[in-house]
Amino acid sequence: MTTTQTQLRLANRMSRLGTETAFEVLVRARAMERQGRNIIHLEIGEPDMDTPANVVDAGVEALRKGFTHYSPAAGLPELREAIAAEVSSSRAIKVSPDEVVVVPGGKPIIFFTMLALVEEGDEVIYPNPGFPIYESMINFLGAKAVPIPLREEHDFRLDVNELASLISDRTRLIILNSPQNPTGGIITKSDVQDIAALIGDRDIMVLSDEIYSRLLFEGEPYSIASVDGFKDRTIILTGFSKTYSMTGWRLGYGVMRPDLAVQFARLMTNSNSCTATFTQMAGIEAVRGDQSEPEKMRQEFQRRRDVFVSGLNQIKGFSCRLPKGAFYTFPSVKQTGWPSKKLADALLDDVGVAGLSGTAFGAFGEGYMRFSIANSIEHLQQALDRIDQWTKKNL
Image 1 (cartoon, one colour):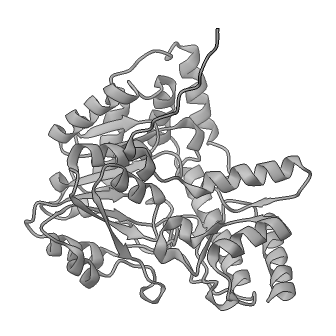
Image 2 (cartoon, helix red, strand yellow):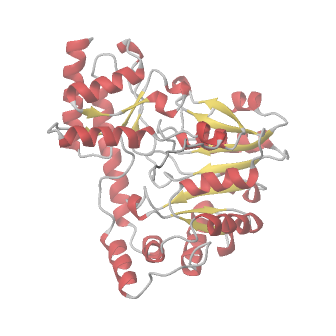
C-alpha cells in the first residue's frame, strides 16, 4: 500500500492571524543559550520574582484537597465573589459576582470580546504601538483595525483629539490600555473623562486592558468603568499574571455587564470548558491574602526602571522617557540610524542582549525598542554595558 500526503488547506482567516514576537525571540535566545551563549533576557514580559509563598501554598493545598475537577465555566463562585469585592473597592463601582468571568490568562478576554461584539467589517480602534494580540484578533475576525498612534512627544498618552478623528459610524469597539505595553505610558484621569465624553451616547463598547494597574509608579489608576454611565459599556480585562507573578498559572478575568458575562461563559464552555480549579483557589488567596509582596515587586520594578532608563540615556543613539507604569522601557533608537528590527537582531546576535523591535507592537513602533526590566539590577547593568560597547563599535 502507498500513502499520499494531502496538501494542508487552512482556512483563509489563518493568514490574518498574527503572533507575539516576544515568544519568538525567547525561543531564539534559548536556542543560543543551548549553544553556550550568555544571553540577558529583556524580551519576555513576565516578572522574574516567584509567586508569593502564600499563593503557592494555597494552590498546593487545593491540589491535595482534590480541587482537580471541572468548575463552572465562568469560574468558582468564591473566586468571583473575591474579585467582585476587589474591583468594587479599587474602581469605586458596584460589581457583583455575576459580572465576573474567570479565564485562563488575559488573552481569552480579548478574543471573547471580539467574538461576542465585533462583526466582519466593523471598526475597532486600538493603541499602536500596543499589545500585538489586539491587532491580530481584529484582523483574524475580518474587522478593520484602526490604530490610534501613541506618540513620544505626547508622553505616549492617547491623544483624545486624534481619537475623535478616528471614530466613525462603523466603530464598534475602542481598546484602552493603561499602564501601557510596550511604552509604559498611562491614560490620565482627565484623559479617561475626555474619552468618555467623546464617546457620549454612541453605540460603542470599550475594552479596558488594566492588567498592569497594580504596577503604577505615578498617580492613581482610573478606569473608564468608573465614569458615570460607562460601567455597562466597559469590559475590564485584568488578572493575576503581572501583579502576583503568576504567568504560568494562567489566571485572568473580565468584568462586564451580566448579560454579556453569560455570553463569555458560553464561549468558555465552547473553548476551554473552565479554568484550572486549583489555580482558582490560589487566586482567592492572592486577592484576599497579604498584599505586601505585590507592593514590594512594584517598588523593585520602579527602582530598576530608574537605573535602566538613566543608563539608556547615557548610550549613544538611545534616548528614553521615564515610563509611568508596567515593567518596560521604550527607548527611541532613531539616532542610531538603524531600523528597529535590524538593531534588535544585532544586539542579540552580537552581544547577547534580547530585546524587541518597536515594530513588534505595530507600525508606529518603528524607531523604538522595548526592553523588559523584569530582570535583576545586576543583569540590567550588564545589558547596559553590552549595548554601550556595541554602540561604540558600530555607530
